[in-house]
Amino acid sequence: MAAAGTLQRRPAEPVISESERDDVTDTWGDIARVGVVGCGQMGAGIAEVCARAGLDVKVAETTGEALEFGRTRLFNSLSKAAERGKISEEERDATQARLSFTTDLGEFADRDLVIEAVVENEQVKTEIFQVLDQVVTRRDAILASNTSSIPLVKLAVATSRPDQVIGVHFFNPAPVQKLVELIPALTTSEGTISRAQALVEKILGKHAIRAQDRSGFVVNALLIPYLLSAIRMFESGMASREDIDNGMELGCAHPMGPLKLSDLIGLDTVASVAYSMYEEYKEPLYAAPPLLQRMVDAGRLGRKSGSGFYTYD
Image (cartoon, rainbow, N blue to C red):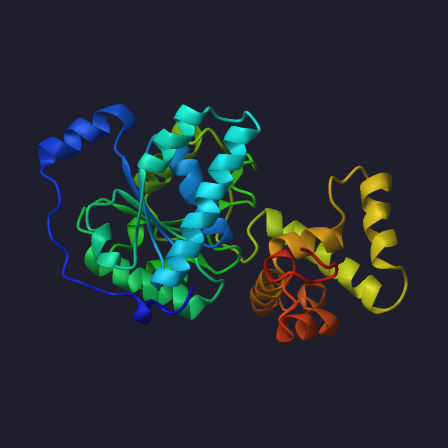
């Protein structure tokens, strides 16, 4: 997703009355209307999870083309879930009816929760939080980020409501993975943490773990050095990509080898997280190997680009 400046911004207007809000929130507690900024791989997955849980979900992208691509991605995922018997056709249709799409963040004025899920770039995310702070009118609305590594406090202080900013980090693919990391900033209130945890566990049916606001949080602080080590092993010629992945799949019972997993995550995302972690800790094990940097520069980003350590149709 491009910088927030490319999104249309219109003055926020009251969209619903308090009585109308009460009618909706009686069913789902105090969070009924969710906004998702970004409809890429993660944004589409998060929107699907929220809509399948019965929430009213509005998704924003920068352009009509990007929005249509994201809509197609999302609806295809729902259709595949119905074909595989994960949901019924009626549930698929009801979920689609709860989804709406826009290129105008001003339409997020009535949202109770907005989850930002754009490219892992601090400047882009900061700009989006500044816009959301202007357009979201509910006084206690939660502004959340799906960031993998960027310190939440930097996003929080870009708003006038730093106590309502929190990290809500889903894992790919979001409709399947059960874990969500909750990352409060130093400024985040206990009320915001409690509401976010209730949403994740009681409404979305995920398992929440709490992480401190340190780059990488819990999962990536463990995962990224492992992935980088596998890339260095391949880069040095110590083993082939197949042997590295088979070694971890067949020898350690991992469901996916580290190079395949890197392709699934996106090599640009792996590199961005590694950069953020290295900037914070200055530990060599967090430094992106030259091969990873060259692959990103060449546009070989993994599954989403069609090629990475492996080639994909």
